[in-house]
Image 1 (cartoon, rainbow, N blue to C red):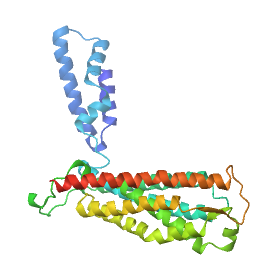
Image 2 (cartoon, rainbow, N blue to C red):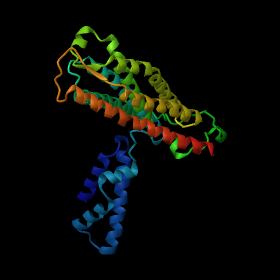
Image 3 (cartoon, rainbow, N blue to C red):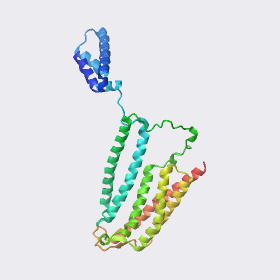
Image 4 (cartoon, rainbow, N blue to C red):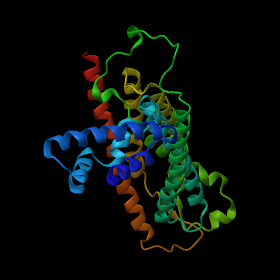
Length: 317
């Protein structure tokens, strides 16, 4: 029965060393019992008959997993916490990467937008890969000790403490929160960076904001800061309520009105000290920025209408 010995040895190689001998004996006995029963039905068994019986049992690794199921890298109870940790850490890393890439972009001499986006994407992917690996390995190490992060022994709970059932749209996605947060921080850096720009960096600029446009942007900064605070509030609550909806309506309405007013406020760009080396003229850049502002104003305008409808539904409950 060389095939049986080879099969049992292949199964044993997939098992923990401490259990190989015991399970090998049990498996060998089971196989021999099956072959004896088959021999009583068919008579003498050929090598092909033995091979067919072993094949019917399954691959050695599958049989080994039936005796000793593989241990998950992360326990099922810890998966919700793992996902939440990943979302939070990746969101924070994205915001930090936006800050670093924006500062580097504004301080560079060419101000290439494509290079800025590539640097932002490459930097975030590198940070995300490192964070993902570190977090998963940390959870795996904790799981290896037998502890369950998702289980809190000794902590009593009551169904009365559960939050009220919410509508589907009331849940606030983390991706939306961190996207808004990164956008607001990007705007604040772009608006206030000229204040601490040194003369050498300013001399390398071929296009700058006009004084009127820059002043309007700086006066609007408190609203952007309020939007940052709203994102932090959303991160804390994670459920739309009346106060959050009213705050979101007010801030988005202010954004929509300001973007339209900025688009029609006159020249937004002016020639800088350096020569303009671009595929577009200053007038074309001005027109593109104006149209971009008007298109961008549609997004907060849409959110105002959306949140008004949500507020109406919430008040009718």
